[in-house]
Length: 141
Image (cartoon, rainbow, N blue to C red; front, top):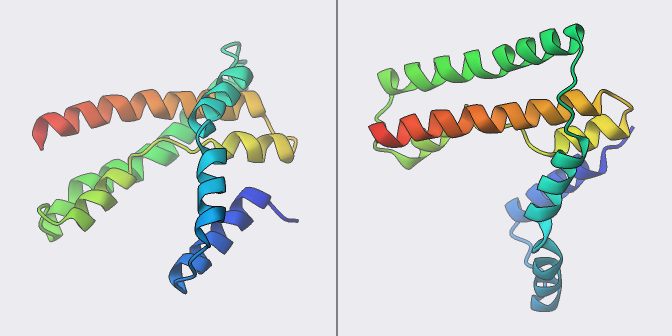
């Protein structure tokens, strides 16, 4: 089974690693296509967002948030014990460990006939939690 968004990421990554450069016309075309991407991403999240969760979905949401954030928080706290936080690489790893879930989770859930409503509320929840974490981090840094 193929998952086109992930396959696209892999192909793009490989092309970047080997140093492949697209002609300017293609780059300009892709840039124009990508301009409404943020708006469309937020629209898709909002479209599938439904706060009427049953008990099992709430339990799954809480478990997912715990599985996502506990390792990230542990990494965020322990990484400075071993490395200098003046390095941008270490800061990027630290921040990456608490970033919100990507929109591709909704796309994947829809494509695989999974619970799109749960995926959408998970993305929204992680976005809100990350905004709170980032606000606290920016006060420290």
